[in-house]
Length: 407
Image (spheres, rainbow, N blue to C red):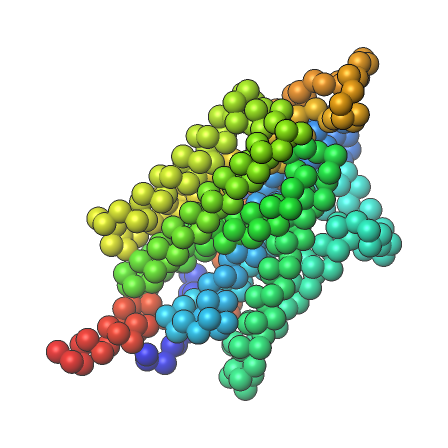
């Protein structure tokens, strides 16, 4: 392989400033939505006493999970020794931090009283998985920042593998912690399962790589830099493997619940009788986010074609939002079984499926988190050397060079 040369993105064109302005507008709208919800109260949203995690949590969880998966590209290079992925590592770390910041900002602004975060950061209940995640999230940003530093500072390059291994382990623990938030909620029949941790890890691989592919291709096509078929083909095939893994763990989750009689009702709700949740599961998650992308990346005609891989990545992201929506909102909508084996009757929502409709302020706040992540990446690649000058096949693929020299 030739030595990889990195450079900043010039970012002097009108499309660059237009994109930055659009992202900034979405961030301002999100701040206005947060202000409106804080001063008016959460009754202006679709959230209720039954649905306490709404659309902002769907965006936040997706971004946090994707942040862990976005770092996977860098891990493949340093931890598993795949040199083709080495030029992609810097952008991988930047995107991981950006997505995590975007997700956490949504959570903070959805608290109603963001100043209460001070209490959460100074008073810890270590019996709560939420307390553990504060350390995991902050630690993740510190570890990834250090990982980027040893990659970008030549004097520290000898520590890249050690930093990469630490980042790899930390992100697995982080995603396990996020999945365990749901796995430990035994009162919710849709959540109470040990499979949540590996399922969330698989989701992070898929969602994060899909976001990474879109950002990478947009950066190179938008700036006129060359990117060869080797990178797109490898990333596309890897995405297909992760999509299949998510479908596998999802099937295991539901088959295990169907086997247990106590979860039969909630499984019927999600798979058959859940209305919008059933539709989002089968059409959004399984078909749009799973089967169609699998076909796009593995069909013989693809051969690394960026158009099919871009479409597959977009579908994975849409399917990912559907999956998180069904998990978060659908899991809360199903009525709590407060007294198993007993009939309960009262005038307060007992045994009733809770209704929820996302409000515009909730959606605006969630999109603001996405926009913030995008703006961080955009400014990062403009200011610092995160992108290789070229990702052409001849520059990054040793086999390509060997074939040319032999001929």
